[in-house]
Image (cartoon, rainbow over all chains, first blue to last red; front, side, top):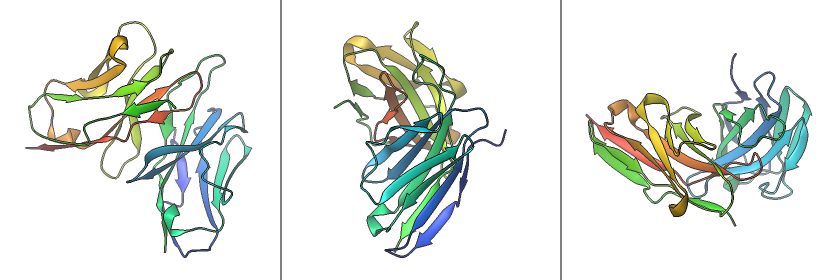
Length: 117
Length: 112
């Protein structure tokens, strides 16, 4: 298995531009997570999906951020408009969420390093 | 709010030294506990996890962690570190959902 795939690996953009980050989870996994990592705040969960449905988006910073999961093999995280404080590494992770069981191992992608100038 | 504390932000050791990284969480109920590692330039990988049973958990690469419920702790240990253990280590907890709450991480540097 190729693992969790994220694209692009690096993104440099200017303030005000729209940014779209993409994630392909491990085949067969039914939970998908978006995290943001910064020096100041560490690793933060932004949103997670189960069976393509958003379960908890309480970590999404503000309305500029949106995430979708149109099918089991693809998710996007969009920032519009982007700001310099959005600069971070964004990780996607997936897991096989078994019914009635929590805390299943999450497998992380390589991350997208976003720089907003 | 639930939180995870890692008090050691940066640890520097020589090879063969013993390692213990602290992790404390604030939640009185049932928890699942994890240690993840992030090698330089790589993504996070699971080192070990505790769900129930024996509070002493053994993971990959010689790491182990002990769950002490009375202390709300899940410290990571390794008897003898190697240069290749240089990485950032994250403690994490889930409560009754799949949401992982991470600590701020501990950066470990091992010198030959």
